[in-house]
Amino acid sequence: MDIDKIIQDDNYALNPFQNNSTHKEPLIIERGEGVWIYSITGEKIMDAFSGMWNVNVGYGNKELAQAAYEQMVKIAYGSNFSGSSTLPQIQLAKKLSGYAYENLHHTFFTCGGSEANESAFKTAQYYWKQKGKPSKYKFICLENAYHGMTMAAASATGMSKFWNVFNTIPGFIHIPNPNQYRYEGDIRQDESVGRAAARALEEAIIKEGADNIAGFISEPIQGSGGGIIPPDDYFPAVREICNKYEILMIADEVITGFGRTGEMFALNHWGVSPDIVTFAKGVTSGYLPLGGMQVTDEINSVIENAPPESAWLHGYTYSGHAASCSVALKNIELIERNNLLDNVKLKERRFMAELKVLSKYECIGDIRGIGLLHTIEFVTDCESKGKNFQLAGEVYNRCLKNGLRLRMLGNNISIAPPFIISDNDVDYIINTLERSLKECI
Image 1 (spheres, rainbow, N blue to C red):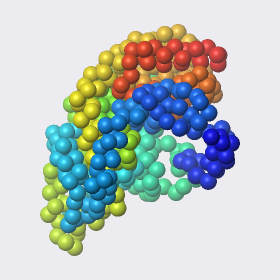
Image 2: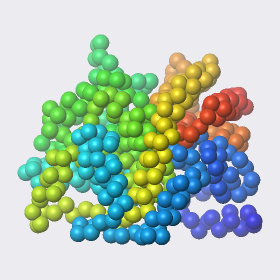
Image 3: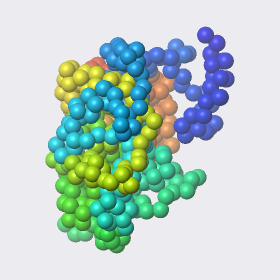
Image 4: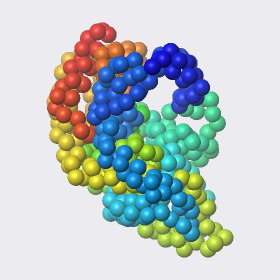
């Protein structure tokens, strides 16, 4: 294998977040097996981030590959635009009816998470227009949220670095996120972070006018924003506020959907159901691209019963792609058959117990986790909570050199391994992480 030529040929690809400063020595993956990935230069690396939060059942699963092959031999792609359909789309939509939340029975399929959230925004605006309330077009979002890179999804994303070189779409309002470690909104006396953050939502609705707000979107656990886990009183309060002001509650479960947090979908931790849920990543464990949006019977009824001149003119060429849907069905079967959510819950307890060893270091400000989604926040010191971006970057790079792939998110390092990890794998992650940290401080 001519490695130098492969690296040279990589210059023809324009990668996501492309910048020469971060792509001088790219890690080029040749193959994967279980929780391990292997580079073209012979490195064996434990992927403790599941690709991009998505390779939930691990690499090299032959059942998923076989499901894709068998469907592709029959028909890989068939149009699912109104008037036609394919069997895998029908079967997957039926499987998902009420699967995430009991009130959601109708699914629209996309190629990924950005498209799913874009679909949710368009559908929410469409719904209110059909209900005779066209002024309801704005969306309230959270600071530090991530919802994707298409124009509306990027506008909903609550990180200014994604706006600096593109124009945002008007109508997206950002409020403080329920970060228990460093909440940036105001807190009244005897008020919890969860109640304060929920109050920020209600105040934003009142300020903008409920007749102008189509929906509120949030991730149950903010992923790219640093693995932010909300207080238990946050989402129940949010649900009440959305009901009070007739605002659609949209749950972005692109990362958390299909078991990442120990529940199949994360809002179930708080007994809350949204009006729209979006998903992607874990639905196929990354073996083929697929995402989607589920809506309530009420929203579906508005779409189904619209007159022809007001039809829901939304869709993508690859909506409900046959091979992708077949892989999704097999992937869900694997998760259920192998009781992988039980393993997620067991390993959550092991991670939280073993991660405590890192709390003795002054540079570790916070350690938080749920299911197999854990985050370590690096600070200059625990008293000031100053964000230590440099150390986080150094530890991330050192871990990679030591055979462990994690994810750096600002001044945080995130751990999100495949659901198939063993106790020995957890030990390897913690030991390698601590060794790498010691080498950097």
